[in-house]
Image (cartoon, rainbow, N blue to C red; front, top):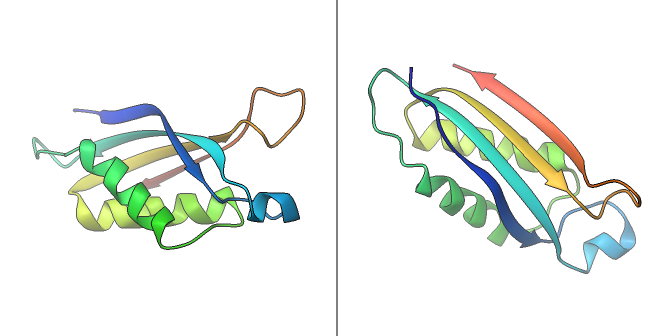
Length: 107
């Protein structure tokens, strides 16, 4: 089985529920691991395009909402049997390297 993906894709965006997060872009880092069906080709470069497209359409309050939309869009556009997504937000918690969420979906 083949796994394709990206690690630590840095994206600057408006994300968060706090007042200051809604006006100032901040960096998030995204990891994606995907398994295509059989020997199907999977364009991992398209992962970045999907993320940019979603974020250019607006802002997100929660990492979970962004993660769900990324997974749904990638499953719709790529022939994937599973996807694992981690989004890291370094500025979320003072004293921590980052806060993060990890989501997985199997088709």
